[in-house]
Image (cartoon, rainbow, N blue to C red; front, side):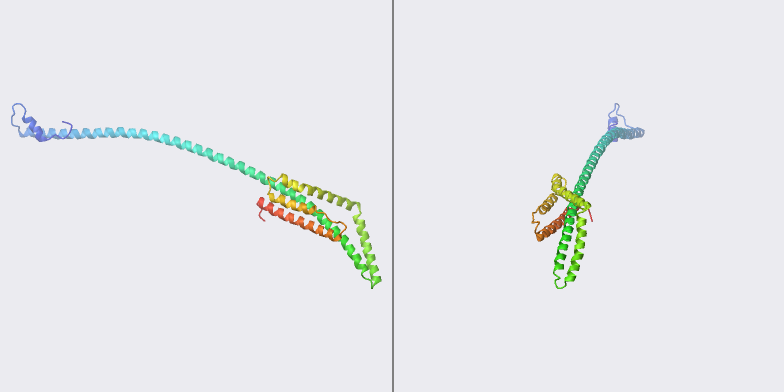
Length: 266
């Protein structure tokens, strides 16, 4: 009866089969109609209630599943964030270590280049001193020749010679003084030490500095070690000129390599 809507004709047919099979009155038909409508309504009502109950159970089940999914998502999210944070911190620490190492290497390079420049300047100082001393002696010699070339005016030549002799005596006193000799000895010693340590310095520290530096210093040492006839004035002058030129070029070349390696903008 409650399985669906009852057909009125079927209900009438059922009642017509009842014992005594008597004719039904109008009231009976109305009652049957009411009962049929009530049955249909009750069937529909219970069907809706059943669906609502089922929906409620489904909703509760979905809510439970949603809570479980939310828990899983939050767990995964938390784990991801934790792992991500650890990765970021690891990378950050590695970058800090790398930055520190690079900084230490830069400082080491700077110290090496400073040492090389110090020694190059000592070599230059001695080369300039030797050049100046040679030019003074050469100048006296040329003035001497000039004095004796004034043959037509003996008095003037003697006057020039006397003045030249006086200047030369002063010069001799200066170069033979203990202070000058000590200074020259010190310059020569520093020059020899600088030359012997320049290439060695570049070779030992080749892991830190550009290999071009060692090549530059090798060329300089080759010029400094050239032999010449110290009795030939022209050869001495040429050698001194070559040494000064080589030292200046070496300083300029090393400076360019240094600026490039240390990334110095000028």
